Figure 1 (cartoon, rainbow, N blue to C red):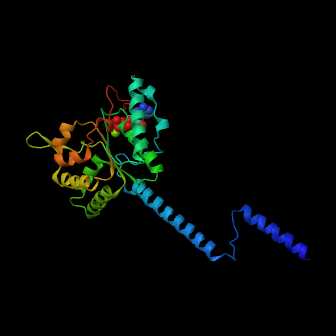
Figure 2 (figure 1 turned 135 degrees about the vertical axis):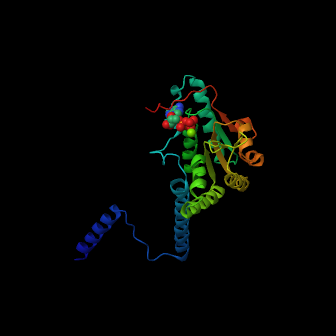
Figure 3 (figure 1 turned 45 degrees about the horizontal axis):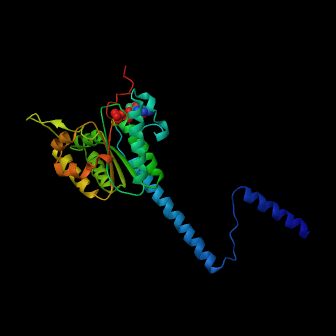
Length: 259
Ligand SMILES: Nc1ncnc2c1ncn2[C@@H]1O[C@H](COP(=O)(O)OP(=O)(O)O)[C@@H](O)[C@H]1O
Ligand SMILES: [Mg+2]
C-alpha cells in the first residue's frame, strides 16, 4: 500500500514539474524565507520598470503615421541601398558606436540630412538597442506634436494629452525628436518660427533634459533651428561635438516614390 502511494505521489510530482510547478518548501528557514522574499521583490520591481518602459514606447510616443509595424534594427540597415555604400556604412557604424556608449554615458546625438536617407530608420535602430539595455525611450514626431497644439486649442481632451506628453518628454531616459524643425511656420516677416506655446514648452523640455539623452533627426541647419527656436533651447539640445553629430552627407532618398 505504501509503495503504491509513494509511486503515485512521485508521478504527480513529475507531472507537476513538467507543467512548470515547483513545490514550495514548507520547512523554509528564516534565512531562506528572507532570500525568497527579496527575490520576489526584485522580480516585482523589474516587472514594474519593464511595464513603465514599455508605456513610454507603446503609449506615450507620438508617431507621424502610426507606430511602424515591427522594429527597425541595425541588422535591417542595407548600405547597398545607397550609391555611396561607404557613406551608408559609415553613418550606421557611427550610430552603433554612439548607441553602445549611450548605455553607459549621457549625451545628445543628431542625425541630419535630406529626407529619405534613413535618419529615422537609424534612430529607430538606436531606440531598439537602448530599450534592450533597459532604458525608457519615447518617440516624438515634432510635426505630430505641433498638431496637438493646434487641436488642443479648443479640445480639452487633446489639451490634456498635450500636457501629459510634454511632461513625459521631460522625464523619459531617451527622447527621440523626429523631424525636428518641420514644425516651423513662416511668419508675416517671412521668418520661419515655431509657435510660441510650443517654443516655450520645448525650452522647458530641453532644460529638464540636461542630464538625459535626446536623439534628434532633422533636415534643418543649426542656423535655421536657431531662428525657429530660442537659441538657448537649441544650445541645450544640439550637441557641440562633431562626434555626436551623424551627418548623412551625399546620400540620396531611398524612399519609394508614392504613386
Ligand atoms: N540603408 C537602408 N537600409 C534599409 N532601409 C532603409 C535604408 N535607408 C532608408 N531605409 C528605409 O527607407 C525609408 C525612408 O527612410 P527614413 O529613415 O524614413 O528616412 P528619413 O528619416 O531620413 O527621411 C524607411 O522605410 C527606411 O526604413
Ligand atoms: Mg524621418
